[in-house]
Figure: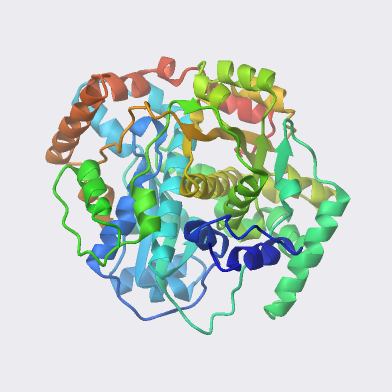
Length: 273
Length: 273
């Protein structure tokens, strides 16, 4: 029972009125569906007990064959935060968050254990190792995000750390066989942060039955209108296709340096074979 | 307030007695920390309302610049389930789950929209596009998993779908610019399923302060003992390093076909530039 909030949140996500039987849903689902990305934090400190629970939630996510490929680097030093903020497109929230985690895909732990036991490590070198470890990282980070939100904090994923990923590796002393995937900022949302529940594609666009079905014109049109309205309400008017997508997809310029990711993988000895 | 269950779950995760102040934590955190991977399902059906909420939770996760790179293929046809089970190392749970989702990293939607608008798509071709989309997929799938567990179901991630990923692509009609990352089985856990809360590395192994710190011998020793005890209790005795890790990391054989992932990326036109 969630006082109709889930229905209201679904209406914001999908644009159509949702009527749910009142017995459907629960407070966890309400929390998941009302997620919004926080762009502005006000000062606060997280008690150690809460931090411990957030990390425990992260580690409790499923992990590929229990290999636990996720590592977290917690950055508190203001000078290091400042440098990371600069590296991530000068995002002030990296400086202001109560906690800033860099989430690292970590094969170094497994490789070093294997080597200490005199075991071969040829099987680590393949692209699938990268996939497994990035999946581990994201599953655990999402659990951390949900745990933090359940405690009343807001969160932001900072993919822009990959804009200058070599410098991030140097800053955090990341050894071979590790790779930073994104940052996660956790803190108290500024009450004036305007971000709201953002519209998403309708469910029939992303949910395919039995086999894949390509996007049709009506699904795109519906979404472009809804997200365009949202951007206008946020006073950042933009056309989702012609501004946002066109910029990201058009050329390497839209990647803000991330078009060199392959070289960075090679530099870190991270698997792409 | 969670009746001390969080402390008990943390003790299973970390092996040391945890005493938490009773006011710390909440039912969502309890749910996250008590996660276990279900290997056996009993027959059940998910009501459409619940399925809709699970998908909405998935779509509500953060997504890279709101591009929503996650697609889901829901497979219900028993014959197709059977073929997918075979492709994923003959896992019966793929057949038995109430719902089986294949989670797809999907650049096809964005690329097709751009092309319809006559826009260039050179920026999509880089390895970072793969990272962004796999992260999107895993964040959304973890939300789906948490939502399903909050409704009383159990879940299993099926990474073994990548063992025969080309055949999975063919089975689901996945076009260029898409890639299946894993399956997610959702269903009613068999009450006789013995899986329990699995031990993880202690927090100081995975949580690094300011800069990365390599695994030391004591952290490994502590974990090897705890997970060894767990495997014995589960009547699947194994040495975590010499059996599990050695097999996965030793050679391409431990990848069950996944050492060909790079060729499969090329076959699907998925970005690794």
